[in-house]
Image 1 (spheres, helix red, strand yellow):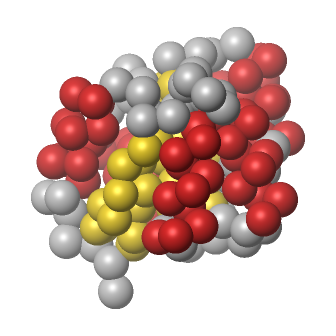
Image 2 (cartoon, rainbow, N blue to C red; image 1 turned 135 degrees about the vertical axis):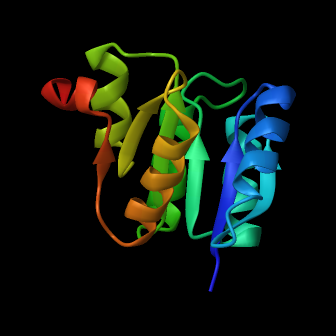
Length: 134
């Protein structure tokens, strides 16, 4: 059974590109895409994905706030941050909110795909260069 993924990022081209790339993996199915944190919260409730790929910097609710809200209502949700921020504040903030992973946007696509599979299987995935910050 395919891993159902919700993408949350305020850049449409990134959402479209990730959706197209993830669509190549027979074990991943993108079920929705949100352009802000509030929309991510609403779609998480209505679509009940297996994994949410969440940007940290988004309008209305940022990724940390959206993760907190989703985790308070759906504590078993699996969320991975995909962001450009490598600072300890963001890494620790999203982890404290309940995210199970953190990747930088300059990662290779295979790394994101691997992270989605890892988190869907119940493990955490933090990019090696960030592990010291967690």
